[in-house]
Length: 90
Image 1 (cartoon, rainbow, N blue to C red):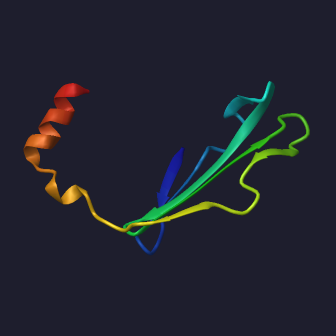
Image 2 (image 1 turned 60 degrees about the vertical axis):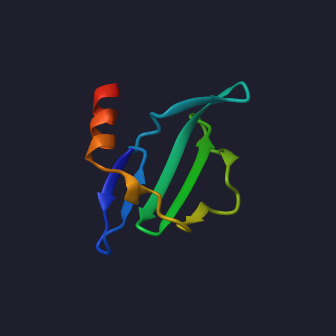
């Protein structure tokens, strides 16, 4: 997925073009079109699958992206020690 920052400071991400992100779904090979838009208070995500030969829509959201709004901020308790532990694990 490639992300680009927008003028308002939020980010937009999309799977690289070219129908190369192949996913088997219900016994059929499909290609994924995935779009993400996020900022400090929102996250929108939409995944759809298409037939690699005909480009016909096969699966995914029929009603637009999933929409999430931040209700709480949980990262304020993360300090340098927590970050150090993450780096040691990976």
